[in-house]
Image 1 (cartoon, rainbow over the protein chains, first blue to last red):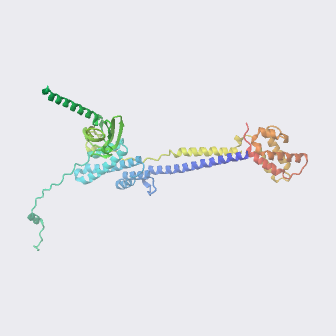
Image 2: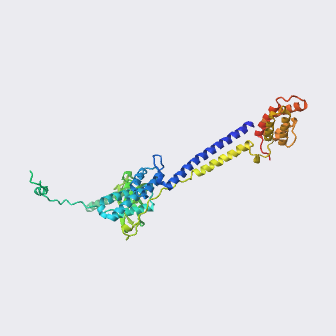
Image 3: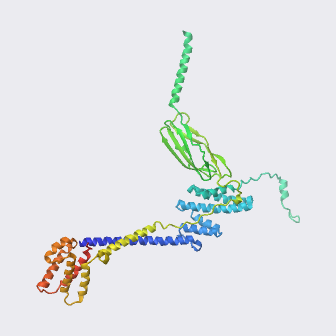
Length: 184
Length: 296
């Protein structure tokens, strides 16, 4: 009977240790999650390092973009493009595509084809990222809408410059600047 | 008679040749396109389009190399998935496309034709699947100038869920609390739940006797009282087995209890010395305290 009582005590002690260990482990994670959520809610003062959680980097990138520093935001988004979670990668590609599109739309609507090269490059990047976002989540209505707009503002193909130069050897020489003062 | 022989022979030869050709064509029926789903639905940017092609193969098998490979097929469509499914003499090829066709108004475009190759069939081994017309309409209402279109904004980071950890914390706390209460109950440290714990009280009272010069007699009295209280009646040495039968939790203490009754008898009736009685009572009370349980 003494042995049985001791066994019961030991079993209860083991369960106590297990329960407290489990509670401690879960509590630690809850504290970490609560801290991360606080940082996500206000990421302005967030300092990034290699251990920073991807969601925090996304929050920082979003804050930088809203603050006007979209280039730094894109740099941060680029670091997240290979995240193993497809749902997270989808959001990263959507945000990148949308930033490229917004910049392209600004240039297109203000300068039109005068900014052909930049608009074309930005729209191409926007389309690539929005397509990838739609590959990962085909029913993303926002990505569909933005991609359609990217197609709308895609500049028309630039016409190839005509090869209509018809100069002759003499006319070439005639375009060379003369040496002032009649040098050799 | 002879003048009919040559035409008759010619006719017989023609009939035989026709029969042979017919039998050959029966034996070698080529793979044939049976149907292709017509797409009456109008699609928009990013839609997935499933194209079902059914081919009757008459014993042949589709050449996997002739199936289109996943990936972009033109500027606005890409293949996401290709599946084949054979049942009887029919093979179904299901191709899932995703379309990225930007349009400003309703438009129709065509998914390109397919050429599927089958092995083991007579006739032409290739099956031509005609192009599939697909209708598109824009998501952005036509007529809105580009500069008036408001693009959708970027998405903020999502707060991390507490989900897996909250329940684990609750489970851990519940487990710890349950085990803790059980442990306290086992050790008799929950007086409310434990009910009267005679040996626990006796153990406490015995410890108070530690500094007395002759603690043997009062110690025996205390322990007798605890035993009586546990049994609900007076317990003597002769009643020990009956007591243990009613309280089997103390069976492990049979030897100590016998020793205690013997020592008590010597002390009270034979006026024996006090030596060794107090430690015996203390040990017995301590062990019994651990075994006693709440009684109904």
